[in-house]
Length: 277
Image (tube, rainbow, N blue to C red; front, side, top):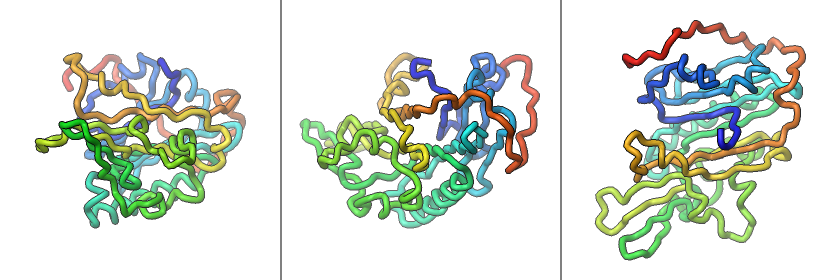
């Protein structure tokens, strides 16, 4: 609510047992991937449901990727999310699988007039994509040096048709990007006796080139650090990427709905939250 967000794209939430009825009461419609996948989409009822007619839901049959297509007054808009398995920087087999997953997501997004995809990529671009803070205060870079640009990474399929939203907004072209403030993942040094903290840029928001002129904001928000029941801030967490587009009239009259895909079937929600889960 602080950011007036209309769509929330989540990854790695397989152990989150939110009640659909509880979310609906709070003003959100939820769509989950099927188990054991971990991705999820939340749509704000007050805005996105003005485009409810013709919405289509897509869940990958092979990967932890999903998305929803909205039909806007200016054409179809695909909004997708994906969780990419870990070790992409170091494991060749994991890289090959991640490349296939990204290609499927990019291909699905390309079917629409406009697209936004957000994912936990578990992959860095360049050595500067990961910063290690040592116990003596020194910092060192440990990102993937072989990924000199996106074209060297498993995300190469987005190059040319989509843009990295955060880089587009914050990279000033002076070779200082990404800086520590641009990192999206924070973790402790783990078993290392000399590293106290690790910051990585491994979460990404991409939008189609058709939306690039409307991109007005993409900021790293560290609020998830405080999303704990105990009140103690997390040592290991992913920040949120808050991305905003200047799109007047987006949630207005959707007009006629093109019958490009089968419409979503209705869902009967329980009358109360399922506290037994």
